[in-house]
Image 1: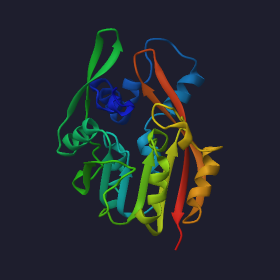
Image 2 (image 1 turned 90 degrees about the vertical axis):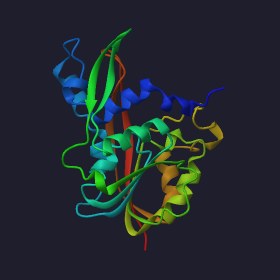
Image 3 (image 1 turned 135 degrees about the horizontal axis):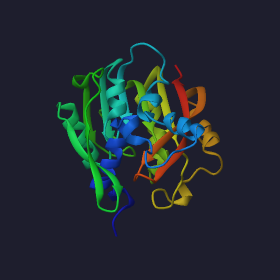
Length: 252
């Protein structure tokens, strides 16, 4: 039986994530129907999720950065603006290939699905302000990261935790990945699903309390908030979700 993670190797999901990471407001927001202004405003505020999560790090230079669950690379490219070295890791071979092609300066053509057999061709490019030469992408498992990664000034993991079969394996590794004084951004919509994570590995209660219990021995919680995000599936079907975001600082 195919793994639930196999969906991240499909062309359809690759197209959706390229649009999610690199699509413009005109491309993403629904144009088929007239929406109430307040709904249009809420949807517009949900764009650029991969940019907004990175913005929660403290201002200034960050040295080395690690982007776990980097998908097709937008958050890694955003980290490259302030960090001298960025490692982006994702479990999907298809996502990593696309991120590397973008890093090499290619404009990637992908399909934006409309309905049935209808689609539009779109193009993804690295933002002009990014420093792609500072980024290295690799395929890897966030639960079994290679031992020679070293330590980082910034670690970013957005919408990853509730897609891992054994999320504690990542949480237990995090203290060794963040240097003292360094920062960790975790974002999760807390959509714990059996097809990704066995129920025995879910948090016993609220995800936020579970994270505090696991992380506070090694990290100080700086702030928590929520960041909305919008994934466009078709011209009339959208996933609107709210990701719980927390910023942590590694204790000395």
